[in-house]
Image (cartoon, rainbow, N blue to C red; front, side):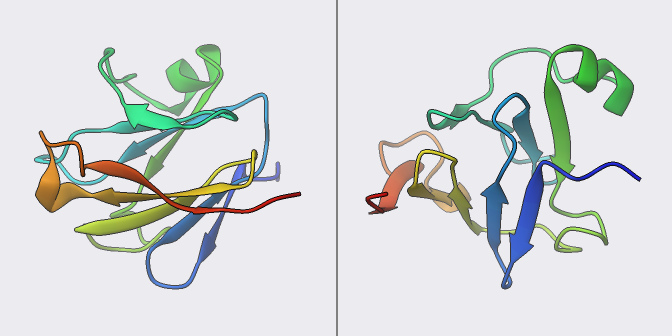
Length: 109
């Protein structure tokens, strides 16, 4: 089995760990997807790949937070730690505002 490009920590934290793969985070059908790169995180505006194989062709890993091997349920609040040492807070209740994705913590390496 190949290594996953992310870790799950606690009840609502994803840790991105493989630089060459972006994470496409899906949080149920009604929430906007976000893409996590080695530089940061933003709302994803592209077409969502049909399956994991199509995502791999785009150098992405699809992460469905509702999947049992991730969190098993939709999240209103999600924390994402990127490779560059920043932790972002994604507050789905604030979608459409500047507070949707914010830097939560910055760690110095």
